[in-house]
Structures are given as C-alpha cells and as structure tokens.
Image (tube, rainbow, N blue to C red; front, side, top):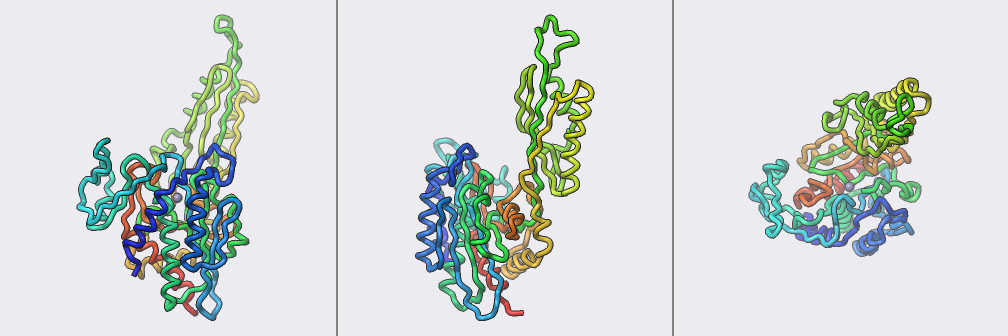
Length: 412
Ligand SMILES: [Zn+2]
C-alpha cells in the first residue's frame, strides 16, 4: 500500500518551496521562483524511474510511464500545476500535522490566535480520526495544487514498483501559472500525445467535474461631458449617473451572492469614474451556452437603449470571451468520465459529480483538443490561511490514478 509517511514527506517537500505566481508579470513562468520546484520535480521524476522526462523553456514538465501490456491501450494523462495563488502568501509555509483529528477546533497559531474551526468550516467533521495537514495560519498551504502533483508522482512510483498492475502508456504534465489563468497557454498537447487526461486539481474527496462556466469579461465605458456646474444646464452629461442606470438595469438577483448550482450571473467587480468618464468592469458567467450568449446581448441592448436616450456612443461595451464549458468537448467521450467514476466506486469513494462554478485548465485543454475532466486532489479552503488537507484523501486520490490506469488497460 501507499505509505502515509512517504506521502506526507513528499507533500511537505513541495509546499515548503514558494511558487506563488504573479498576474502582473509577463514572463513565463510568471515568477522565477517556480523554477525551484519545477527543477526538483523533473529530477524526482527521473529518480523514480519515469522516462522521457522533459522540462521546456517555460518550465512545463512532461514525463512518460511506458505501457506494460502487449495490446493497444489509449494513452492517458494526469496534469497538475505547481504554482500557488497570488491571493495569499506562499512564502515560508510551515505545515503542521495533526494526527487522529478529534473533531474540534484546531489552534493554528497561538501567538495570533488563529483557529481552524468546524463551527465555521463544517467539512472538517467528515475527517474525524484522520491526519490533517494545515498551515500555521500565516500563509496558504499550497495543497492547490501540490497535492495533485504529490498524488501523480506517488501513483507513478507505485505503478513502477508494482508491475503486476497492468496499464497502458501514461503521460504526466506539470504546469506553472494555472492560478493566473495561463497554465494551459503554453501546454503542448501534440508533444503530450495523450488521448485524454485528467487534471488532479479538485477539492474534497470524490469530486469529479466535467462541466464549468462559459466565461467572458465586459468593460463598459461611459463618456460624459464635463461643463462648469454653474453653467451646466442642458449641457453636462454626468457619466456616473448613466453608469448607475446601467448597473441598476441589470437583474439584481443574477449576481454571485444570489446564485448557485447552474445559475449564471453578471458580476460587477470594479467601478472607477468621474463626471467625464466612468468605467465598469464585469465578468459574465453561465454554464448554458445559450444563456451565456443572451447575457452578452442584454449588455449590448442596454447600451443601445441608453445611447439612444443620451446621444450616440455615450456607452461602449467591450466583451471578451475567456473560456468555455468543457462539457461540450467531454460529452462525445463520456467514457473518460465513466472510467473515473468507476475507479472511485471500486475504491469505495462516493463520486461527487457537480458543475464547477469557475474554470479549470482542463476546460482550456479540452478546447485545445485534449479532453480533460477534473478529479479531487483532497484539499479544502484553497487560497488562504485555513487551507488544509487530510492525508487519507491524498492516498485515495493516488489510488484513483492507479485504478484509472488499470481500468483503461482492461482488454475488451
Ligand atoms: Zn488549482
């Protein structure tokens, strides 16, 4: 079996290396410190016996576990990212290990009185008796997504050491800069050469995802007309008032704080303005392609209405698509989801199949031609000081990888 100590040691060796990405940088990877872990991973893959280990000039890592059967088996891939979110610091991570979790509050930091409590984070209660790895309350942990990397490396090592488990060719891929939306950008799917892949980048045990939002960003610019307030009658156009009209004309209940499940939204996330000009930044999200399109049209229509009221070209709306729901790319190859679901069932894991209210690298990869559902990596409370992961979930995720490899190779 996969040893608990071994997996803890490996995970800690990853999270203690700072790999925070930076959205304001134009380099690839966005921060040079990501090389520290990337180089270590490339070396480690060679050490455990992986073949064709490569690390390119952008720090993308790929490696192969050759097939150990005679018959033809599709090549499958497993993908994770080694950067951590710029939302919270990833420098000087000091992981803490709590064995046999008692179900109550965990004091993360005595000096700063930072407590991880099941009264607030109810999910904790499902891990009573398990071993939790937490932060010391001052950094994120980086289980997102170094847990995924740890699981993939551990699964490959396990398959190498247990050649009685039959599998086809397996490719692994580790990327930088997922957290700033660029993980898939320089991913060479030709070179990767898999028929399909899985990102190991979900949260709690059992998660299996193949639906995500369609996403766009919208910039709404309102041009006003500035005139001395004392002589403004009939002349001044105050862009801020028109902006308010625009904001209030969109459905107030179709916003992130009022929606869940498959409900889409408009999200106003920034306003800056004066009399002369106001700019509104929105994001638009919807799982349904038709609704997604309709939302974009609502914005254009509203702008037209206000333009005809205040004079042409007072408002301009600039919408850019960001990513699409991978469901469209996965549904024609649903067996790749079924295999993952079957793997979980055989390991007594209850599959939690739900639509992601966000995007994944897998959605971009799916549209690039590599169908790529997402599987749990086991962590909770990503991107902040309360991030934690049960070691048992990491072991289960490692087993899921091995089981998927095994199921894919069954001769039909
Ligand atoms: Zn992630």
